[in-house]
Image (cartoon, rainbow, N blue to C red; front, side, top):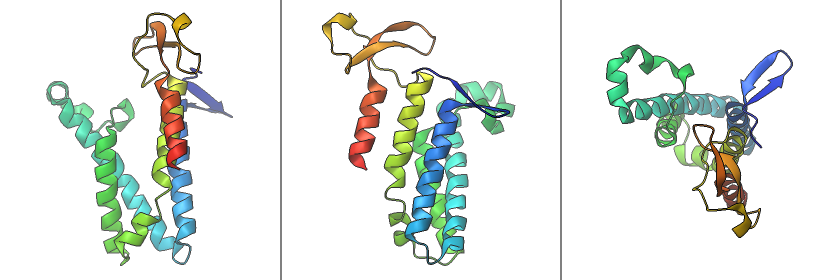
Length: 180
């Protein structure tokens, strides 16, 4: 697929970021719909969850690459330079959502339950984004001739070097759809 950027009118966005943002937005919209009796309170809690997710994702990335950030500490708060970790995003989002529930005097478990479809939807958008951007590529195989086109394809790695590889992104998309 490999389409790193998407242009919408005058805006040019990274396709991965756009798809992930759409997945997060759709997941939040479904959650607000499921708890439609109190949409303002739910949206507030979700926004704190989103903020917590972004902060947690950056914190874990910085900790995992501490040697780099000790040399350039100004980059720690430069979110636009990339470097977010999904583990930190999940922990930070849950913490932010919990704080949002407490702030808006909501019971946490129904709020969390309202996001049941959001997780596989976000995973689906992330895998589609990786397919578009060429990230999360699979291990190399000897030749395309020995495998079905559904299993392998020629894809570039982080350095843009194409090689026959397992089609990991398609497996992730399929798993996300099954999870939904």
